[in-house]
Length: 176
Image (cartoon, rainbow, N blue to C red; front, side):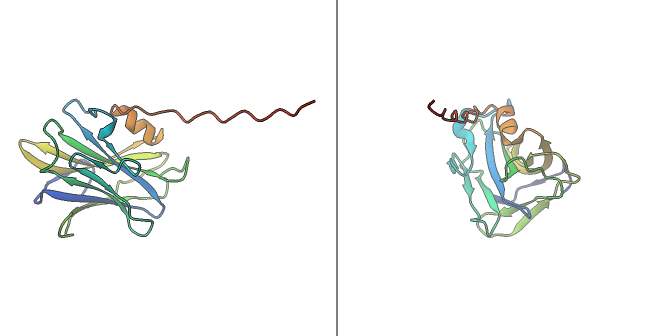
């Protein structure tokens, strides 16, 4: 696939595997027609691996992490699931790291499409693929939109509440 291209989905359950030469954090966001999550429960990732019709699957370091979408179980009002990725190492960019998303039949394993975003640089997070509903039919779209402010930037753009990192405790002061 090329950026912006789409395919109709021929199966109800798809897995979007995201692979790269480094460990990635992969997540999925369930979005309404206004492009926002309904609540933080619509943000699916390693610490919250299941949601309505969407599941996070860890590759355990030896296989790609994936977001699995069961289109028949996605609740009414959800029109899009965006699949995101960011390098696991803090501050690492996608420069020289070309992630590839593979959209597969989640049950049979057949590859439906692949997408590698071109020319990535300073991005620290990426919306790589969308699974979306159009005129009653589910489709997959190659996106490749990068963010320089990490996964927190993506999450807040889509309406997820992101807690700031807690401040480091103050260093103890030596007694006189």
